[in-house]
Structure formats: structure tokens, C-alpha cells
Length: 306
Image (cartoon, rainbow, N blue to C red; front, top):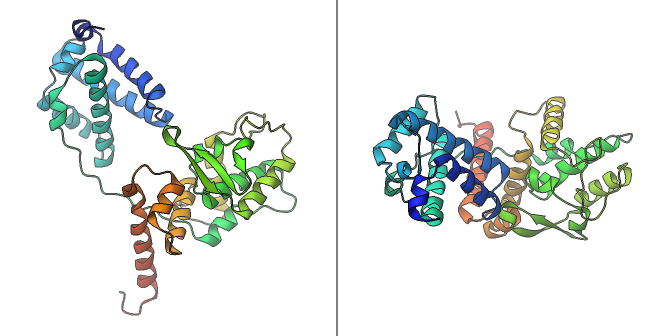
């Protein structure tokens, strides 16, 4: 498409093409796609009212820093947090990088838009005994209970994201390791602990469906792929039954995996590889977790802590 044609193109059409590029070329997660698309549609709606006319490629090329700041101020009026504002800026930057590269539409002002500073939240790990209790199953457990226990064991024992655990196939289980396909289709190998392997074997023996090598390992009650919502719901029920805090979520089990490895002397680089983090900075948050745990111990145990 020529530059002239791109400038006349409806901005909504550009957003559709951009989202397709995010999905197929950059392999962004469905969650990121939904969030980024929603941000851009809000932005276009704002610009339509702001300029009083339909938004085209030409409009986007003429957006100034004051317009971008006006949009963020508009969003702030809806109680947007710094963390959410930072995500919106990231979406806008991604979009304008694509318009420049793919359509020749350059918004020079985007480079001057600063990212709001968001306080990094320190993950709250689940204690090892609590993680064990969450994955415990009675002797007369149903196949779905065994399935749920196996999933939770994977989250804690292998440090997986929910999406990674639910995308596993029997073929990905390779003896002492698991082949994980993570974000942006990055593949990594994670050790398969004996307890995790036992939990998976117990589930597979009782599952009423045929588990073909390249089909989803974990199934719902009708035989389809298990839904992340079911995992979260079951975790919530187990948490309530065991009297655990609201912070004991499926993702907290992944945090616990990293925190407990760090506490036992594991190298940050090794933890980075096991978690599938693209950068070491994403993993370094666990040093803060460990420090936070030590402070909690100090405050609760030291006679002069108060």
C-alpha cells in the first residue's frame, strides 16, 4: 500500500491489521491482544471526539504530544492506575511502531510520551506445606480431582503459567523433563519432579478420555481442553477449604516455585530459564520476595521488631 493510500485508510482498519500482525507475526497472547485492541479502540474513540471527525491514517500522523497526554488525562478521569496507564502507553507505542514500519505512518510525538511509574508488586508465595495441601487428593478421588491436583502440582512443581500447563500434550512429557511452549512460542525444557510425574500418571490412569500424543493432556468433563476458568475456580474452592489467603492463586504457585528455588540457593539465571522469562529483570523480583519473607519472619519473631 502506498503512503498516500495508508494516510486515507480508516484508523479502525489499521487496528485490525495491527492486531493480526500481533497474533501471527509476534505471537502475542490472547490476553495481550484483547487488552491492546481495547486500548486502541478507546484511543480512536477519544480522537474522534477530540478532533470532531473520523480518524484516518492522516489523523494519526498528525497526533501531537498534547493529544496523547489529553488521552491519558481522559483515562485518568476513570480512575486509571499507574500500572494500567503504563500498559496503555505500551499498547500505543506498539501500534505506532507498526504503523511506521508497515504503513509508513509516523507519529513523531509518541517518542516523547513517558511511561507512568508503577510500583512493582512483590508476589506473595504460598508456603511449601500449603502447596502440598492444595494438591492433595483423597484415596477415593474422582478423575477430575486427580486432574486438578496434577495441574496444581505442575504450576508449583514446574513453575508453569496456567496457559502453559493447559497447552501440554502427552508428547511433551519426556521422561525426566517437560517440553514447554511459552510466550511467543519460546520452547524450554523443565525438570519433571517425581511427585509431579506421579500426580500426572494418577490422572492419566483415571481419565475416561483417550489422550492422544498431540491432543491436550488435561480435559474438561466433556472431553474438550480444560478451561483456565475451571482451574481458577477449583483453586478458589481449595483455598477457602484450607483457610488460605486470597493471595493463594494459581499464579502464586508459579511465584512460589521461583521463590523457594531462590531460598535454596538457585542461581537467578537458572530460575530465569526455568520460568521462561525473556529478561533477567523479570526474574529479579524474586530477590524482593525473599527479602520480604525475611522481614516478615523478623517482624513476627524478633522481640524488638515492634
